[in-house]
Length: 417
Image 1 (cartoon, rainbow, N blue to C red):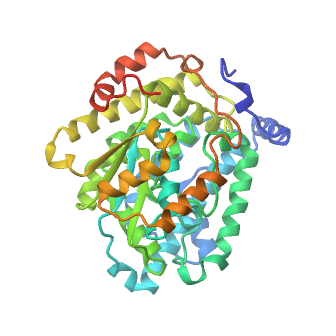
Image 2 (cartoon, rainbow, N blue to C red):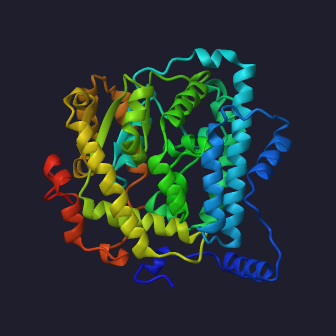
């Protein structure tokens, strides 16, 4: 049972429900369609690609933790099991092809990733809109959805309009939309739009993407105690791969989960800078819990919105405490530029002009016009309005305010919307 949630967001095609019921019946009769076996998946990836080198073996520990959580905690439907299994196989085949590309094209390793800018902040604070606006400026380089989902061979700017992986990614996104038809109300995606770095990090199996999509608390605990520097070394390695034949003047990257790993980011990118987005945590936590509920409902019949709400409050409360502590070390403070959500959505072009000035960049008239065209073409709520309340997730405004009081005082969010 899924209590107190806007049921308009929790919809699945009836064919999916039929397949899931049939799968549950067959499994009760002793038939199994999916086994989350590490060696079997690795063998299949090798057979599919004809390759054997997965690169650094450090990916195996988080992979094992993740697969065990799929088996014992996620309570996946048949469709959920098939989706998780195929996604794991895709990531493994991508790894094989990426490391093979590095052998065939050693010049990739000579690429330098200079002074990347990371958009960070609590989830649902306008970072997707901001990233899409930065992507309208051809000077900026962003990782696009198709490049991250299907990265091999290295993208080539000279034939970007002809690359078949763009259409292949559109097909994959349409399949996902079929499974979770209301997800686009919360977080629309397109094959050629910029995407979060969680998709890059997923190739190391050290990524918050998994815990957002599935109920896997043991994996989440592992993630909070693991060493993330290796994952960010791979992140830099991945950017080298993307920019080799498709360069840009500077990288603009984003993911809320970078907040959890700022130490690792700075260790790998000592010249990095950050745009820190801010929004009232009462809105943030409710919206985040709603997004995770919709995602998990696509792959499981056992979804507990109250537990998801508590997870969101606890997880992001801990993370924001770490960020406040780091930003109190003034040696890092000059690397941050702050932006409030209400300023971004009220006057987006003015907000971009301010950000460019703070970063020491020039905003060309062509880039500004492209941003204006994007805003006209993709207005907010074009797929419907995302409605949610904290009460749907078992939370009270007072406890969210109390948990984030220092954060709100630090960034002037006491009355922010």
